Amino acid sequence: MDKLDTNLEQQFDLNLIEAVKMNPVIYDRSHYNYKHFVRKAQTWKQIAESLGVPGKFFSSPITVVCVCRTVVCRYGAL
Image (cartoon, rainbow, N blue to C red; front, side):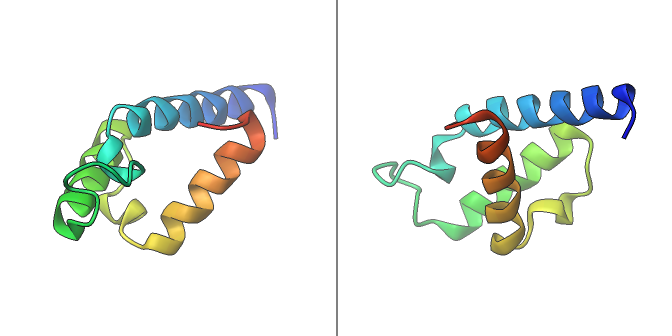
């Protein structure tokens, strides 16, 4: 992978981290909408749109876990 691709990937990851931090409904179990699956799906769709990826990118819980795990492994805790 060349340096440009690495920089773009890193910027995507950092933007994803910031987007998740700004939406505690995704990760904060004490959030009043944490168990509201429709609200969480809408939030993930908004995050995908803000990052310029297809809305279905985060539609699967397995995909979300894999992406978040990869980001955490690269940069430490969110």
